[in-house]
Length: 332
Image (cartoon, rainbow, N blue to C red; front, side, top):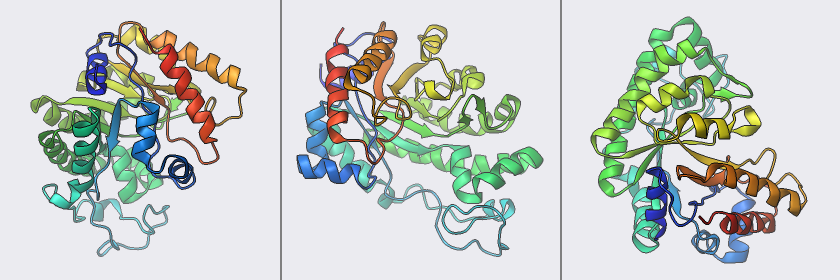
């Protein structure tokens, strides 16, 4: 199988020749420096680890950065050195989702990874809650979600309409999976009540999901932390796979596999909080990797990956060792 076939077979809940593998290294200093010092390029590193997919990012996001117009100084933590109030965010200027400059990096990733290496392409896409954090700040977002949920819903729907058009453009360019990033969880709990998620976040996020499904695209979700209480809604929106199903935050990947097989796959398993880069003896690290893969691989529906980005200070040799173990145990 070529890598893309391996990924798409797994996402159809069938067993490919081996579990697809990937890792998150998205440009953080130190880690990339170590990789390029040894391999010359990041692309050569991907080849050496025999990765099956890539995750592409836009060259610029939805928001035109700059000082908020007619907005007073905010007491809330800024995302870009400033924040909008909720009212001014509803009028903030967004980039044109049809601007070709947004897609320069995505086109290059599709050309190289899909065109030359046969890998699947996931495209990073703004989710409504997480993206709003970048506009009004997380503290204000959570406060307004509790106090003025209808205004939050209006902002989320603005973001969703932008993301929907962006996702349609990415699929037309050849992306395989629209990967929506929307952190809702913390350790052992959601950041808000499940009812709030259903009433405010779900309807807006569904606008993106519906646009992707109309184009015949596949959906992937990233949400850190504990999101078990809303997994029924995630499945209902049409997501095919969820990253990372974070065991260190209280989720049970084995239970999710049992409860949602055929509806939600799992993308993750190598926890960067408890496994990779934590100074574990190699034998213990290998044992943990074998435990995760052997638990989650039966029947397909699983992609092995880090739970988040490889953290600075993680020895490159440890990453290489972990992925050699993964390749060995991933065979069906």
